[in-house]
Length: 412
Image (cartoon, rainbow, N blue to C red):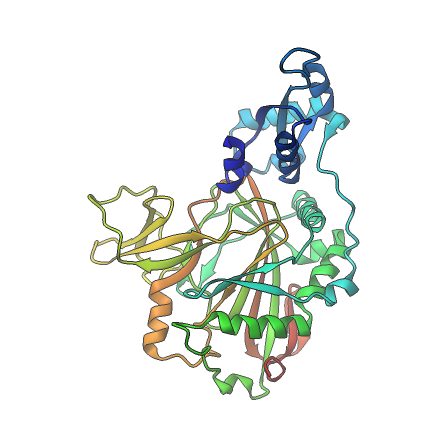
């Protein structure tokens, strides 16, 4: 139960090593070994052979010492104490080629197969409008995608500072961006595979029409479209990006820009920290003023002078410096299994006809976040934004951007 809680709480990727007494002949123990290997840990077969009990009441039990599987060069980029890094390097040298890792069948990453993918979307919340896409990747494809990103990380990366429509995030250099040109060069089959999925017009059309229904409020009809953006002059664009977040990275409450119609978040590390959905609540009562975990400025709230704090595992507070305005939000971490994607629809996008009141509600009462700061030592993630913009020549786009279709082709 204690080990299972590491997965449900998202703490599993915080560990630099874990030692557990296990007997692979017991089903529950065998399942735990499988989950740890799937999560990117390895162990030494020679060490197990030396420690296994040969007789007695604990026959076939052994002390398994699991460590993260990423190589010391990648591990050296993580902001951790030198003692832990030295320990990891020593264990990797000791394990050598004898280490046991997750065994999987090398995925084909066939672009033709990716173009035939049809999304299956399960609604998660209405305010804000979110869902979970089931079966996007197989488990083996997730593991291979993770390796592809870490291979690129070892070669090149750039620091990335997030900014929202409501203001610029504070300096937080714990998110590393993987250049799309490098990904195409080092991992061409994976790059073509994801392009085949996310840049496919039929896929995008299904996704767009499905997420419109996620924007229902109080069981009313979906937001009406502003036909000004469906007059043949606008197109749907995709922006595909890969990041590696380091331990301690966070994004406080924010909403996407008005040109973004929806976003997909695909964790590429099984059981890693998930995106949080925030909704305003007035039911929380506090006996005393909370003590802040930190004084970071809010990365995306509409009061850029506000501070944020986590009051408990499920409550989040924003407060202005002069204490005149305090907002409390309920934190709901979206549960995703390996290979699934989080869909975040943006009802504040300008393609919807919103009243000023509806727009104000969207801006002040909802949002999404990566908060509290992540526990993962390394969190590879795939982000796909879909934007509605005026049609321009494809040659003027960045490497990670593509025109999918004219907006007149999006809905029935």
